[in-house]
Length: 99
Image 1: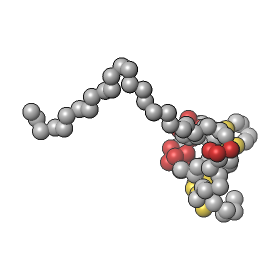
Image 2: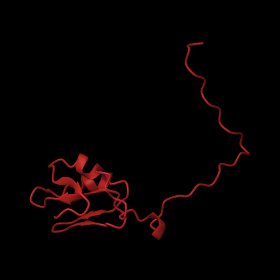
Image 3: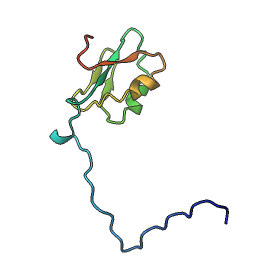
């Protein structure tokens, strides 16, 4: 024995996993009401690379040649978009701040 913990065993083939709720774009999953921060995009710095769109865990961002759209009903304000933005065009600002 190497002193490492033993790997867990998988359930038998007849075992059923419990059903758990899955987040959907329903009224119950709207997160805009509890968001603490929100992304603010500087369109002058944005190069439209769409990396923020690819990494957004909620899929709420859309970018085209002239617009940057965020679905505020579902944006959680996690800041991943700001973290992955190569030109640093996204800043996280307090919810309710001007901009």
